[in-house]
Image (cartoon, rainbow, N blue to C red; front, side, top):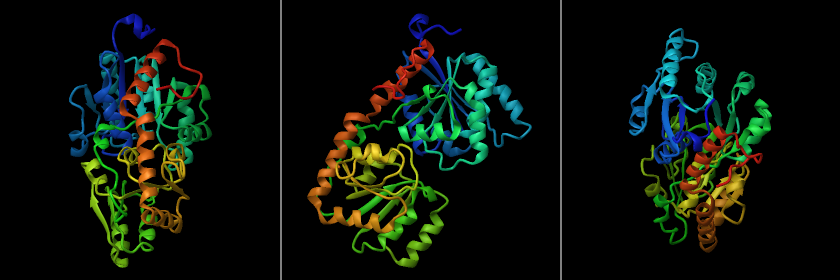
Length: 376
């Protein structure tokens, strides 16, 4: 049995397991955690279920062990060999905790971590399950007895998990994301009436960018820019071209603060969200925000206090809210500055890192709080 951290005189060893690395929200938060966690408290390692693509390898952290398994399909006979590789890695690293992200990594790693004798297995749920099928709910319920705890990044994700997969409520904990504030605080709020509206988002249907394109039809005189990539690019571009809109899709964003500095209004138009990293970045950048009231967004942005909230899928309401901020620069600036203050007070990256460090220490010491949210 693993001794408490304070008694063994070493950091808690945590192996993170994820499908592969990308510039999306969950992966970005995980990489920040690995880079910035206090190595005297937590010693990380990373296992990539796939990890063979050049994009993923370019993002790999340089200061922790990394194992690429190259599992393309869980049902492939070669996956058994990859499972043996994973077991050998765990026996060598001797983790106190294995933490998994995304369904495939959980289906693969949770049972094997138990076979390897890892004391604690943790799953991560950072969305509200808009993608889930019946088989995913069933598999999640099968894994529940093998899991010590599940982490959600907001109450909305926790509630969705309890509804969909029915774990023991006391084992589901909320650890909110954080943003690297220093990258955004140097940005000055917009200095005049809005001319440019934009978003940072993957080009996927769940992000509701077709709704933003429809809203742009109602807002002549404004320029729209959405930074991101995804399989909806061709369809969005065709609609933009047909309507002859001033609407650019510049591709993946490698310098988010610089991009946000070009925007006068930032938009989150998702049909479903957990706790949006893009929204945290908009807040830290003091952009006036229009966002759809989905997932954890109303927890971050209170309507009329840090931004404007609209129903998902409603192009007319989205256009009206953008137009309101365009008309009233003083109100737009007030909302943007209020959003920045809220980000500073609650959603710093340092606060997030401390939440996770405390979580791992309490977990192996058997001192998990009864309250679902781990305090900052």
